[in-house]
Structures are given as structure tokens and as C-alpha cells.
Length: 595
Image (cartoon, rainbow, N blue to C red; front, side, top):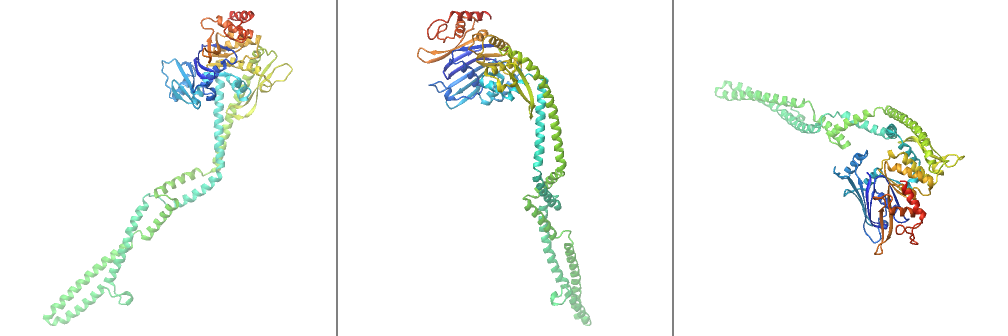
């Protein structure tokens, strides 16, 4: 997504600056302090770069903003990822939209980000940055000194097969670490697991001994206990009644004789009385009737006694006694108190404990399984990592041979560039430590780039790396801030060629003080500052190549860069008001004539 337009309001010395950017390579020139670098900083700030809101606000203002318009390229390889990020942030892209507007607003205490007018997070802007811009500034040059950055640059040269290898290594390393973690956690937990296993076994044995099958057993037993308690009372009373009817003992301990025994005695007496009165017809009917009635009562009493006796036997021979039921209820109540659970919960706990104990049956065997998984995962990682190492080694040799002559052409005629692989602890990136080496002069040993390279040499290395990887860079716009400082003559010619090559594949915004670089750029912006009629400081940006790449204004700017005078009004020395030296103007015209 190429940058089309930048608008800045109330930032540092800028009150309202608007800039249009063209595709390809654009040179940005201007006097020191005019605000050239502020343009690139503003672009970075849109993507979440940290700023001090109070310090960055233009004096006398309370609110600032930066707005960046990007060209939407739905055919770009990374557009699907960009669209997914925008969707997550609630930003809807109309299919007819050909641009994307990013905005950052800030006050002395707050800062907000928007895409298409929708508030988004700083993190979202930061995620978007690698797809839009890549800055070639001092901090990036310093990052080139780190081994992680050097490995990233080497890997950037890899093809699809190499990227697949990297993915396999990362996945294998993750699987290995997970296996190691599982094994370590299992071993660390063994003491705790042993204690837990003992507790589980005791609990399971207690529940198993109770034979818990019916979740409603305690309710059923409570009901049965009430019935059995009533049965005891029935048995007791029926036995008392039986003794009243059929107690033939006359001892004081056994109580009075029973009713049956007494009726039998009475019937015997009545029978004797009936025989004695048989001789007297008038008196015989009474005693006989009495004897018959008593015999009938004896038979009825016997039948009643038998029925009561059978009733008592039935109660006595019931399948469960109250004692048995109460004992079972006490067992269940004890388990419920011990575990603090209801009977259905106890049954579930019993099943859970059984499953857990089955899983813990053989901790030694399980530890062996986990260790075997670690070994397999590590072997898989090392297999992929070794293949990645071999691919890196071949690529390092090839790219070192390619980079060296390109650096030599940048006024480093005797330099040698190398890429060395050393063993590194296993990581998601494999088993390699990548180190760039540099030899500036013949007869000197190659040493790590971080130890020997100057700022100018680092800038050249970075430029060459970007040129070689231009077709693989994710960012659509490259930002260069005075990367040609300290270079001259043939070196600048080579730098210009490299920038032109980059400009054919990416949008390149390059701040420069070198007339040769500025003249070779197809597009040229010039930043100026000065006082307005009201005496206020203002900054403005002039497009010098609009309609004419060799305009009079552009010739004057290049002449001032060549002659080294301070720019005032275009074409005059700020100190003397005189025109730039004739040789400078002629040189500028010659530079432009070569386009």
C-alpha cells in the first residue's frame, strides 16, 4: 500500500503541511532544521511510534494530528492479512474504495488512532506498519549489529522451500518443548501424586466397601426404619395380648393365669355343675347352657390365641430387622459426613476415583512414555534443524559472494563480507547463530561486523541488503534518512543506481544532502521554512519535479546543494542575496541532463 498523501497539523515547527507522494523513488531535500526528518517521523508516528505529546505539539496549540492516505492494492499478496486485521478492528472497506486513511490525533495528555474514521488500537497500527513502511534510520543501522537481525536478513533471502523448512523447525521445536514440559511437570508432581493416590485409594476403598448402588437408598431405608419401628411396637403389644389369653403359669413372676386357662377352668366347673344338676330337671337347663357357652368361648379364645400367635410369628420372622436397617443408615450417614456429599454425589465420587486410580495405575510406565515422546520430538526437531542449517550454510556462502562486490563498488574496494554460522542453543529459529563478518582492508582478519564496521560501512551494508531483498520485503514504502552521509563521487553513483533499482519495485522516500542523489531521483520534494507576513514560522514542501524534472526551481536547489550556500529565496544565498556560483548551476544542469 503506497503512500499517496501526508497531512500534518501542529507538529513541532509545522502548523499545516500537506505533501503528495508519487510511486517510485522520491528525493527529499532542504536545509538542516527545515523539517525534512519530521516528514518521515510523522509517517512513523502514524503507525504507533512513541512520542511525547506535549513536546511534539507546536507551541501555542492544544491539538495535533497526522493523516496518511494509502493506496489500496487488493491484488497485493499481503492484502488478505491486512483486510483481516482491519476487520478485527471493526473497519469496513468498501469494494469501491481505492484508498485507506490512517490518522493519529493527540493532545498534551492523550493520543488516538483511526482508520477510515474508526477508532483503533495502537497495537493494530503497529501490526500494520511492517506491511506499509520500513525505515532506514540510525536505530535500524544499530539493529544490524545484533545476531538476531543478521539471521533475519539471511533468512529473508530464502525461497519457498526454505520458508517451509523454517516453519517445520518452529513447529518441531514447539512440539519438543511441550513434550519436555509435560515430562517435567509429571516428574515434579510425583510426590504430590503419590500422596494423592494414597488418599484416593483410602477413599475409594471406603466407598467400595459400602457398596453404593442406589442413589435413593438412604431415603428408602429411612422409610423402612419407620415401618420397622412400628413393627416392634406391634410385636410387643401382640405378645402382651397373647400372654393375657394364653398364660397358663400361676407363678407370681409370670403374672396371672391367661384368659384361655381361666375359661377352661370355668368350663370344667360348669360341666361339673351341669352333671350335678342333671337330676333336677328344673335346674339342669341353666348349668348346661352355661357349660356350652363356656366351651364355645374356650374354642373362640383358642382361635384368637392362634391368630395372635401367627401374627407375632410373622412380625418376628420379617426379612430385615430394625437394628440391621439402622446400622446401614449409620454407615451411609458416616460416609456423607466424611466426604461432605450427598449419596448421589458419593456414587459419582466413587466412579471418578476409580477412573483416576486406573489412569494412575503405573506411574513408571507413564513416565517412560513421556520420556519417549520427548526423545521423538527432539529427534524430529534436530532433523529439521540440521536441514535448515545446511540450507542456511549454502545460502550464506552464495550471498556473501554476491554482497562483497556490491560493497566494493560502494567505495570499499578492498572489503570482504562474510556470513558465518556458529552453533547456538536450540530455539524456534533452529540451531544456528548467524554472524556477519567484515574486512575493510587487505591483510586484516575478518571480524564480526559489530566490532569493526563504521557508520558509513553499516549504511552501505544495509543498502545492499535491501537492494538484494527488494522483491521479498513486506513493506511497500522504504524510508531513508540521509543514508548517503559521508559518501561522494563514484560511491554516490552506485548508491543512486541502487536507489533507482529499489524504486522500480518499491516506493522509496529518501532524505539527502547530495545533489547527485537528488538529481537522479524521478521525483523531488524540497522542504523550506521561513517567516510568514505575520512573523510566524512556517514550513512548506514544494514539488520540484511536477510537470518538469529539470525545472528552474530544481536547478536552483541542486545548485545550492552543490555550492554549499545557505538557501534563502530560491536561487540566492541567504547571507548575501547573491545567486549560486555559476559552476554550481552548470553542474546542476548537467546532472539533470543525464536523466
